[in-house]
Length: 373
Image 1 (cartoon, rainbow, N blue to C red):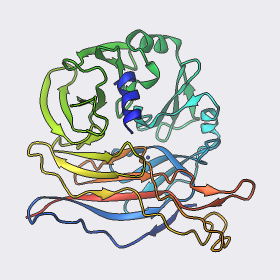
Image 2 (image 1 turned 180 degrees about the vertical axis):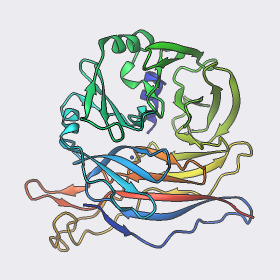
Image 3 (image 1 turned 90 degrees about the vertical axis):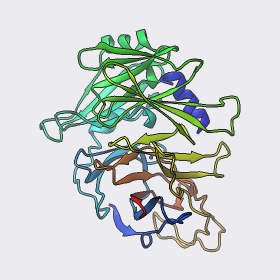
């Protein structure tokens, strides 16, 4: 994770079977009064791998870009977060064919999926060899055929303001983009192709990370407090107003991998280890007080595989074991800041060549954030 976060810092800086895997999980309560993160549901969303996702503006449906885990095939799946059921019939596989190729790069950290102000679905991706950027527009509301847009002028604009334009970070509606020039963040308007504001890096910081707030009206910047210690993830969060770039708030947080709630009161954080598999948890922190919820583990304990998930073959005598690790391409706050929804990829955990045996499945999880009395 630290490698990915550093890369981001240089550049700008997760048929459905709607089955709950278990009863809602209660948090471990370290204190009688405080902040609780309660897992309310978990749904099996099949053996495809989530590559990116976006929550619709009403907070009722999550759209997930799925691959076949290699990836050599893509599909869009939309799920009702209330019960995990798939709600779309068209998977847009034909429209997504342009995403397939050895040089095509979809980075989940750049906010690649968004709903445009018109209500259509936008997917941003890059050719890693030519650095040409693309915007796939799927007209969910406006109607018509899906289109893929590219612009040499726009690519030149990014390159003029960023050392690594392929890692430029988009706003939740894809109308703005953050390009990093190595010493400052350049906030650009993607439609008019003009600069909105330039915000210098915090003093002494080489690789700060930046994201837009959910409404696109604030810039959220994080950096490691002790970048020379790879095991120390304590960080500083700075929040700037847009479009003027005025510093509004400063907070101390235990991880730079965070998502601030729409009301600005909380942040959900990924607590991770540089040793893959040692730690992969989410917590919620109340920014003003520093009060932190109990942690929810995103991984599972490894378990024996008795049946292949994809074909039902009995492999109980082979000795296969799941690795239990999940990745989270994106995390989404509900619009009223009352909870979280996220997709988890099992990463294609499987064995075999021609007759592949899939060990696990991807998940959709929902959480409630509760203030205990």
